[in-house]
Length: 419
Image (cartoon, rainbow, N blue to C red; front, side, top):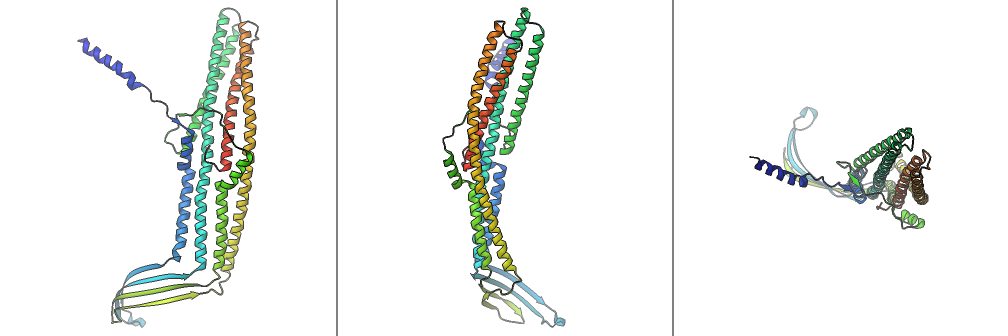
């Protein structure tokens, strides 16, 4: 009776480990985060919509320069003899054609709109460049949070090991019992710091998920390592002045504003248009079944109340504003490169000193542990050494993260799309 049940239990026991194995953690790489920021971040999507609207406006500005054709169906039953109008009935179809022959202002305005649309599309690239840098910063924040959490876990493990050693020494009568309470308090503080680090890590992951419009926060990221920069300050500055998207967009807006001045001046020139119309239908009384007309209209405004001069003044002011903005962006590009490079130099030195400080702290902990085992250390010597090592680990992790962000800032200032 029991053999079938035992067999089923054995099969379940053999099959359960294969099905119950946890899925490997999904790691979001920095390259994936950067690509997501370039294509799907909220700021990029908004900029793409703005560029699409600018392109649509540019297409609209070209419409009056092209021939216009329309057809219509008309029916009229007029019965108003008291108003001096004859009683009549009409039913006809009509077609009309309008061809602009000479419209200098419209052509220049369309050119300005085209350049403005191009600047808007370049603005999408500038927004993507900013989004890449912001996403890189958020990604480095998660990496730093992971490194800090690992450091604090190591600190907790070291405090637990020290507490066990203290308890053994208390049991052997080598130290006073109150030392155990002190070590437990130190362990409690390390556990609290570990929980704070875990919370910071989860919050950083949530921030990145919201920034990149991810459905879930990333389970894992690549470990924090020191990045490499093979570049010079002059090379970065030269590259920034040639390819920084924000500067290119500002240059294009200056050209568009210049075309706007020409368009405003074009309003002082004459314009001409060809109009043609034909119809076919019936009427009562009969007025003929078909007809048509062709006309050419040329116009030159003489007195407009100052609207053209006001439009020219506005266009000139918009050009001056675009030039000032372009110059401001150029100065900002040079400033960003200089600041990012100075930060890179500072973080390079700080990372080196933090590495040395960690090695010194670890050596001090080793010495303090040897003195404790020999019974020569003072009561707080090992605890101080443990705290110093924990602090040095976190300082080194923060230095590396800051160093990597400085490199990302250099690439952003240069207009690169690599972090």
